[in-house]
Length: 476
Image 1 (cartoon, helix red, strand yellow):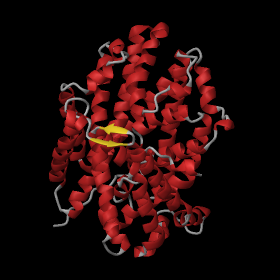
Image 2 (tube, helix red, strand yellow):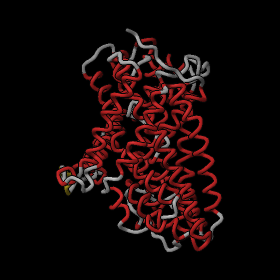
Image 3 (cartoon, one colour):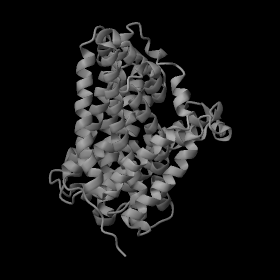
Image 4 (tube, one colour):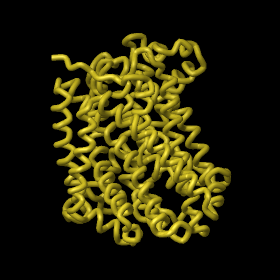
């Protein structure tokens, strides 16, 4: 029995949904962290360079794979390769990866809910205490919020493409943008904020090195949701007459803009309330920054705006991060749901229900790996010490596997895809100016030459860094 596929109602709906999938903790928190520790403006320039020259061709290829095949990643890799084998396994990896990312992303989103509620109820001073984060993640009470989050997220997914994913993106993405810009305006009016702006926007090229290059490329690739099957799946919902190259550019611009403005919010805030800040002293962890350092920064605002004002700012910030997390979580979970609908011929309701049960099962064990279970807390040793089940999932599927899936997509599009005229023919549909353009020549050249090489190296280096604490760039 064939299941009718959903589609976005318009190109704008696709752009907002795709941007919603890309905009998440990676933009709002990880990007400012990486910028602060890697030279500020220098990191920003290298990041934009990689988005334009490496990530954009990969995004266009993944969206084209989805639209041409009208399938999930497994179906897309299988159909466009003309067979199964290795290519079908590459597609399965693109299903497993977002599923496991959704497991740890769900737990982090629950923490965000707890922090938002505490900030909104006037407990900002509690959040700023050093031991608070450990208490939050180790408390069984978080499962109450976990249930509420699952109801919200899977309620959206029950609505399907138009009434669920697209509708929530049309509401949350503009709301997120307004909230972000409002916070930036407030922060930039504070004393000493200019020091953070200068560090962020005035490049010091003496800080340029291989570490900056590696960090910028990793951040650019991960923040755009590449390599996890989202763009392939969303491409299968994309309109036949709409331009993939044009829409890809707009998604990349939207995603990069949010990352840029997040840096313009957080770095000036840090410098404004601690003018002696040394960027090297900031946590290298997104989790460490958002749940430990930033509450202290918000609390320090009470000297300028009072305790209530500081609590309001903190509440708005955590609401902002929550909206971004929800849009990403919905998009991530749509991938395995689409797989069940296409390959197993499940109805949408059945696929959503099965995913809800599976994600909840694994997420509960991941949540218990912060002290509730000794076995899960010291689950496996690698990278120089014992790691929890949560660490293993986050490290493997958010940082190591993604470029490998992107590598397979590049090789498929450049050398194997012949069905329907190949990648160029698909990108030309809906964009009469694409054929013969500089963009077409560049995309074909990039995917056939340096882009897969770079992605393969990023995979190998991430694998080496995470599991053996060794940076391959040190050999260069």
